[in-house]
Length: 107
Image (cartoon, rainbow, N blue to C red; front, side, top):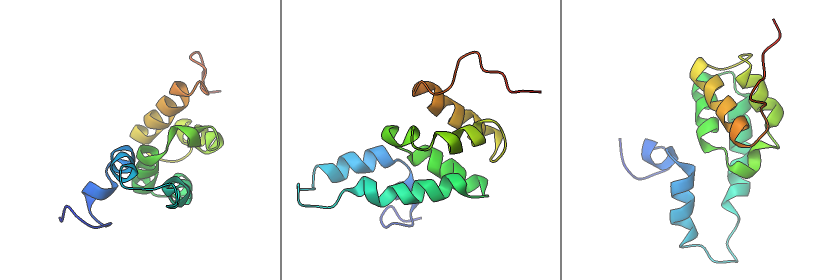
């Protein structure tokens, strides 16, 4: 797989790394890249595919977690996604203070 291009694993691997690299090249007149990726993250969180859910969980920015709280809770509670995705969603919510430490899912 190529290391360049939008379809490569390396491009999509880590949003934070790419944004920091791009940020050094952007000027105040350039568009906000976060605005372009927010709909992609939302689509990934609502997808029926474990693949896209896991990608969205990896790409979500800290300031998007609260806005996506309901979707993340749905994934964390096991209503959608894999067990690894459930754990990742729960960790994002915990780090943001949106998941109580003593939460128990109703039986």
